[in-house]
Amino acid sequence: MKPYIRPEFLKPGDTVAVVAMASSLSEKSRQTMYWKEMLESWGLRVKLGKHLYDSAPGEFAGRDEDRAADIAEMLLDPEVKALISFRGGYGSMRTVRALGTQIFAEHPKWLVGFSDITVFHAVLQSLGIESILGAMPSTLGDDSHVSEESLRKALFGEIRSYRTAPHPFSVCGSARGRLVGGNLSLVHSCLRTPWDNHLDEDSIFFIEDVDERMYNLDRMLLTLQQGGYFERARGIVVGQFTDTSGEDEWQRSALDLVKEYMPADKPVLFGFDCGHEHPNYSLYLGREVTLDVTPDGGFLKFL
Image (tube, rainbow, N blue to C red; front, top):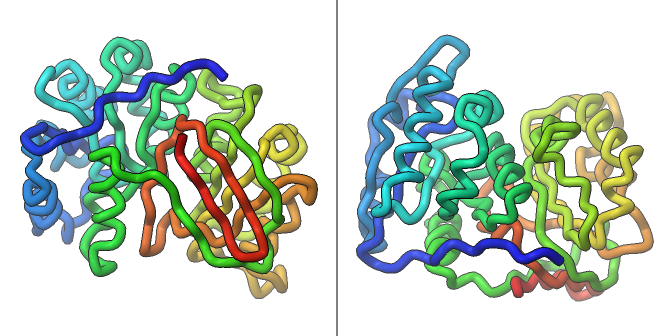
């Protein structure tokens, strides 16, 4: 496996940047600074993107070039050790188009987010840089701090492994590979782009999604299956599939549908709490991991 760059983990006194990489902040989010106080309670300094509170038609957090400028400024700032996207939504691929990707290679730093931010994780994976699939300020404060604590541990380098309960859909087995993936619809959107991860090296493939119709979920899963992605993966971790519509018409749940596309000859871990529900546990994407699935549950270990 090719070596990946692992940015330095944070320590008290370090600075993190909170920027808007995609959609604009909700009105509720504009009225609270809980997330800033939380980051500061960890001993971190917080810088805000100049265009964090901007909005533009299409529900974007300002113009594409302004979002890109905020990210570039924070990557070039030697004080900033990590970039945290305030929320997902839509717009990450447009931001990448305006920003380009070379700046990430020249100034590798931790990047945090999930959902639409999967595009940025895909870019970093194409450059050989680890990143954190984790909770964002827009999602914090609603689950007795479990997601928050997982994010803190990820930023400070304290996450070593996860254990999960047994799940009836899981497939037993063991595998080792690089943890990649993210939000299914964004993984699908990255197909045939320069940052499409073909899983050419040993990989553990993570997927989750939210607010999709069953037919669209089926289309994306079918595309990845026919493209050989599930076959090439050494193992698969299935996260949360939330608010899927059309389950009554299809007479099965979203997870039932996902199960239909999973291979039977490699480990598949269902029931991993990562995605658009709470708790939302943070993952180091780009990190080599071992995956063990047994009748007693799952064990994901970061190497």
